[in-house]
Image (cartoon, rainbow, N blue to C red; front, side, top):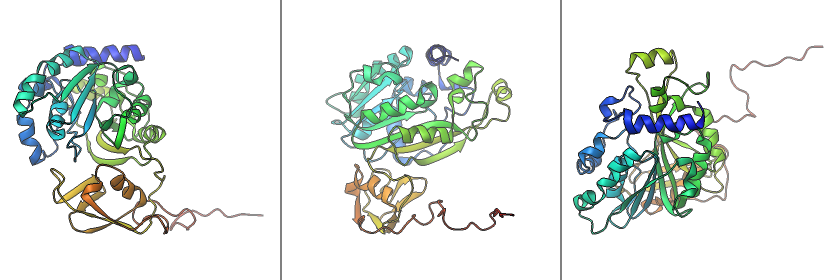
Length: 353
């Protein structure tokens, strides 16, 4: 499928084929995950039409957003944007970008309604029509956003690597990209090609997970962190038959564009103590799937994790112990083996003469 065909397919599918979330044929765009309690009242304040035209693949809710400027890439009808608008507050801002006119019409028609619903004196959301591969052509000041979010849209782009680079260029000082995407455990067969619903529901654009990580690193995100993942269920018999044995996963990654992040988790004898207080994570801060940091507990961290907390908007929530003066090697338990040590059970080559 060419890039032109892909664009037309996505616009047709999201603009005309889908009318409500009930028209979806897979669980890719559903949210079976447990809903955080603090999110429920926020969603209840979003207009019904916006919610009914929501086709994202899960919650995209970074924490510590008060006063932040957030760019929502592929904002659709605006559900995530209006959810985040409540978290950034009246003096923050959320800018949504989408290429589907019908979806944008829904989002834009309720800007003033949400301002009143949230009790703000000014609207803190706006929506721009444009292609996610061409963010530089939109009136978006480079490096002006604190946080970039994207809910599955990387799978609708035939230029996923370029999208990662543009997300980096949009970032400002807080350096956080919260990305929800669909990935596959194997690259066999490349991207699925047909029928069109596979592409419209993001499965056709699902990347092999290691290709995605390579794109993210090449774009400047030195140590991508997996936050959550879940297998997808194919509900439609025709699509299930077309996919055969192919498997897909919905994954949320947190990406930091911080200069100097190391390729592996290195141990410098550092630790952090979470002070608490981040909305929804008052007692336990979730950086990613391997870092659930309890309030008040001394929590050893690698050098990269230290920087992700100290060099970002999360710093006020933590006390930091140690520095980079002494290096102890690979951080224990990170899954990386010392290549110089023999591996138990490994086959050893024998030289014969």
